[in-house]
Image (cartoon, rainbow, N blue to C red; front, side):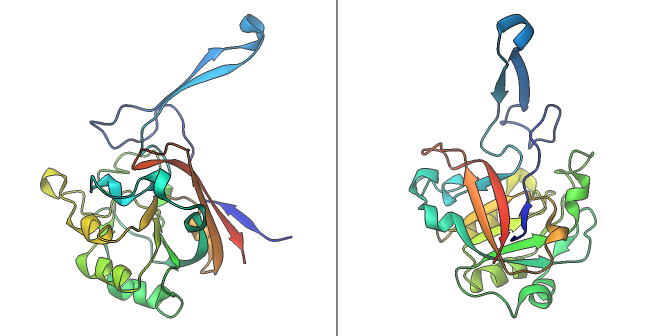
Length: 218
């Protein structure tokens, strides 16, 4: 039997969030068997809640949205770059990516980056002090024509940048690429190769949506 690995973080009350303008995530029971004869829940989510799939429309108004992404792009070969555990505000460098995945990637592959940051899921500072990519690391990713970038951190950019500056992400989305983040359990994945399947909620006109991200052995 082939091995599989769920990389999806849990959605739950009181979880981490990106802050305004995104609302707090809530999952509330609105019916129960004893009172209503059935159980039901109400969810308040947003496009970047928990583990999510994102398109270039996140930054560019005229670019593809979830409904424009063909299903074959949501299942692809994936390699995992196992980097040393990252500290708060520590950058990911091109040299690290080259050592971890430079001989493996082919154009169109997915690249998943493991930094151990998922150990801080729902802990103070998880989003505010996330590791991030330096400029050369983003050039390295783009030069290798990665089709789907996944990571266990919450920020492409240095979270200390003023005004939510997103210059690196804009470079990544200059082409219609996809991103899935933040992931969990990547330390269990080794290097690969795997096949990754990423299935977002079917919200066609959204730029992003919560998803389920699963690795399968090739």
